[in-house]
Length: 286
Ligand code: FE2
Image 1 (cartoon, rainbow, N blue to C red):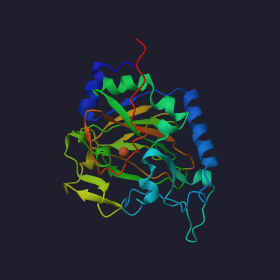
Image 2: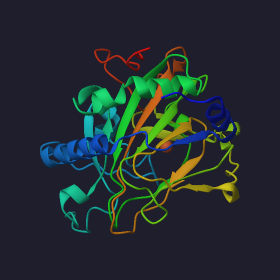
Image 3: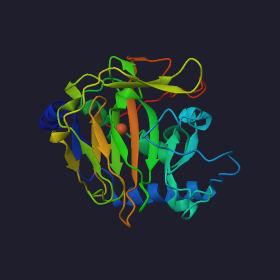
C-alpha cells in the first residue's frame, strides 16, 4: 500500500485523502459480522444504566461509562434510541450508535486489522513518523435514527503537542449523502483549533472555546464513498456527518493514531491503564 507523492501532496493540501478499495469485501464482511456478534452479546442491564452518545452536548453525555471506555470495548446508544418512557424504540441491534474505544487492542478480530502493515504504510506515507494506534470506534449510523456528528476536529478530543492525531475512517458500507456520509472542509486543517475537550479537575469534562470563529462551511464537500474506501483525516481537519434518515445503515470503522514522540495531554478524556500500552503497526514485509 504505497502512498504516492501526489497522494501525499493532496493530503497536505486538503487535510484528507480518499483511498478507494482499501478494505476487501471479505474483510468488510468479517468486521461487520464481528460487530454484530459484539452487540448481540452486549447486555445493557449488566453494564449499568445505558450510555448515550451525542455530539450536541458532549459534556452532558460524558458519564463515567464513557470516561472509562478508553481501554475497554464499550457500547453507546443512539440519542434517539429511547422513547419518553425510556424503552428502546427499535431492537438493540438497531439502537447502538457505536462501540469504542479499544477494540483495536482487545478484540481478536479488530486487532489484526487495526495494526496491519498496510495501514502502517498509509500512516507513514502521509508523513507520520512513529504512529501509535490510540482509539478505535465502530460506528453504526443506524437506519432512521443514526445521529449526526457536528463539525469538529479530532485534535480537539485527542490533544497532543504538537498536533498528531490522525484519523483512519473505513467505509464498511456505502456512505452516501442519504445515509449520513462524512463532509469535510478542504484545507481547513490549516486553521487553528477552535475547541478543546478535556477532563475537568472537578470530574466530568469541559469543552473549552479557544477561538469563536466559525469554520468556512461554504467550502464543505461531501465524501460520498463506496464501501471499502479508506479516508485519512488530519487532526485539524473540520469534518462532520449528517443524520441517517434513510432505511439503510452506514457502518464505518475508525482508528485514530498519534505520534509516539508527541506529548499526550494528561487531561485528555481518553486515558488507558498502564497495563495496556499503545502499539503501532506491524512492520511491512519488504
Ligand atoms: Fe472525527
